[in-house]
Image: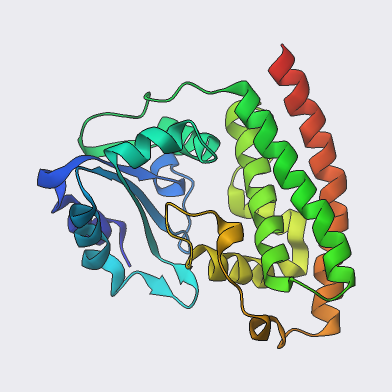
Length: 247
């Protein structure tokens, strides 16, 4: 899956998109041969959004992981998302992104410090809760999602908000934090993410109990250990973010 193929495919829809933006590691120059290709498209109506999704969906996944990930918003959805739970994600994606066509929205969001603090706090406590749930052998996939999401947020906050990242890439950071559990946790993250529409929260995605039955006691144990380790790291990060927000 080449970047040029994906760009040409999505730019064929420029006529009915307000803006199409390349985001993620492909935009920042940190991509590797295994990196996903990420886009954000803001469109006039839902029919245009569905047309864009269908145009690349047949060649855009490998297992649970999207090779090409397009987040599509109508103008109204984008307006709401900027000030909602996706505030930090959109700020990071847009300020580091490359506009391919349409309006340049890369400076469209002003970072809200309080929302950043709230996001980091909420994700920290989701991982705290997962320690107990995994001990009871429950919510394996959901906890993998929460762990991966919280660590990814931490990487972006350290790199783009606090300017304190010691890792040159997200992959390097995630690998260091998750170790041998990286591939397993990432796969479960994308299992949830691939079932999450742009307008719904990941915790609202129904995960059948049967999905988690195939995972062993050892799997639960190693992910629980990674959650415990992450909680200590995430608490340190929260303290830095809270201090930054007060400055």
